[in-house]
Amino acid sequence: MSIQPGRAVTAEEKAAAQEHLNRARAAMRSVDGYDQATVDRLCRAVAWATANEQTFGRLTRMSVNESGMGSAEGVPARRWKILGILRDALRTKSVGIIEDLPEKGIVKYAKPAGVIAGVLPVTNPLVTMVNMTINAVKCRDAVIFSPHPLSRKTALEITRVLRTALKKQGAPEDLVQCLATPSIPLAQELMAICDLTIATGGAAMVKAAYSSGCSSLKSSVSNLCVSTVFQFASPSMPEAVPMMSLSLASRRSFSNPSASYSSRTFTSVRCVSSAPSVGGRMRSSDCSPERRSASAIIERTSSA
Image 1 (tube, rainbow, N blue to C red):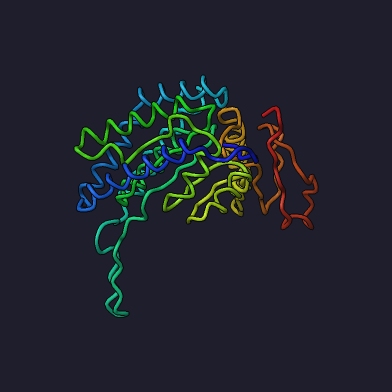
Image 2 (cartoon, rainbow, N blue to C red):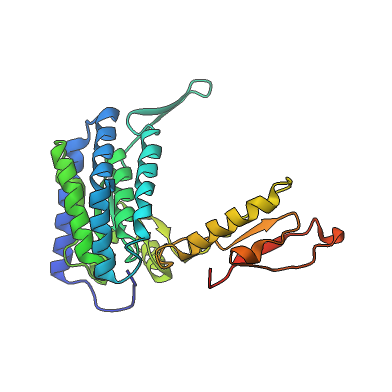
């Protein structure tokens, strides 16, 4: 959501935000006694409810059609990210004693962070929402989503799917909520009253999250371009170059480059000559022995 200076939050919006917060706190009290096995079961439930091929495809098409961003053909590949997030979550202890260091006399206990304000981007609401939900449920937290206006209907439908999955497991649905009528002042009010903010968006959104007065985690333009570096010193380098170049090309063109990450280059410590054949270009064409230790950088061209 883009944050611009504008009107102040209304009394109705303040009341709506407080109502969401009260319901979230009540839901957290209901799950305070859940053990590790129970929260892990909830994590599996919300992950599978959204990552199964049929539901993920439906929600993906809905997101692309509503926002006009991304590609319905490219986004389904992100389904595996949810399963990867679930895998990592299930490997982590989050209830009771999570670490015991007897030699130092230290015992670490997990404690819920509280109610999370989840501010969503327009480009990828589905994976972002499921990611936040898995981690919130894992820690017995609640999350209230503030969607981007251009993907509001999709966010509300994703929330419905997540809440249904929780209800089927006997857990309180209000662990996951979503603002029905999002606005900039309401998002700012939500960030101010919740215990933790997780915001994904532009620089203005990050600034707003920082100034909200509560702890916050942000993802913004700083991760939009990731330079991927590979250093090869083996004789198989010529065979590796086409594979790496094609990998970069697929990442750069993925989902009509709407993803908040993208790899652009890789670096080799050996002479490379096969880049142009896979849609790349050589930054340096000097392959003399004197330059053998220098880096050769291959970029994906716009036609790749």
